[in-house]
Length: 308
Ligand code: SF4
Image 1 (cartoon, rainbow, N blue to C red):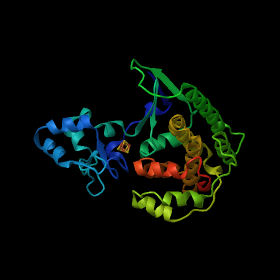
Image 2: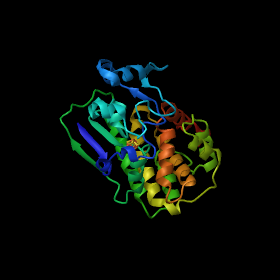
Image 3: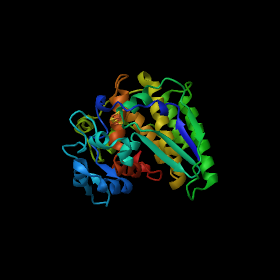
Image 4: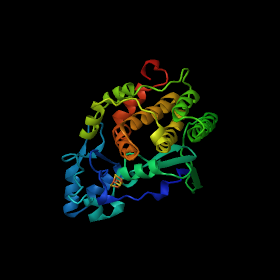
């Protein structure tokens, strides 16, 4: 199996108790079935707590219900009680993997860091080197899949072209975003107004009071001059993470529109010092709620001409 990852991927280190946000606050943790089975067998006080805190939600998932917005195992020093009592191997898949994401394309597995972790966001947004994908091979067999190879290679090639557009410093950043829309199939590519983008976000579930306060105000239209390099990194992240998913639904336009919407909104709410922070907040709210990411892709759908 071929493993693909961005150049910065292996530089990430969780800053644990020094983290200003912590991934264990604000989200309900979904516990995979192997971990749930193991937690049922753990003895002692931690075993009793694990069994007490595992609940089944309306989708049938086993979750740890939040306690005042925090994972019930996140202690007052922002350390994880499961990790402390049972070690890293006892963490469920969600906690082991975060902030990493994985996209499987049969013989190729693409992985990366998600912007929803503030430390990963700083690494991704403030990266000053070349934006580059690295790869390696492991002995895992390709996963069974029904991907059309011709479509896959066509999209991979189109993504490379889009990466080159993002890197093309002879164009304004605004023109690069419009070019991305055009390459993805937009017939009349234009940058959306900040107001229209924010109104789409206001239709999503709001997870944090900070985001609620932020998007209750519509910022002024703003050019990208102050933040070009950081915005290139953000555009690259959204194209890398989502564009190839079009192999499953054929909708390249919604992926390009998400990239453009993210750039317009993050740029409008931030200055040079706060881009990573706003990108992290945007990602946490939009990408890391299953309902919200589904909803935003519906609003941005390629055949929905009224929405962008
Ligand atoms: S949000 Fe990131 S840095 Fe913070 S605790 Fe989670 S993985 Fe670590």
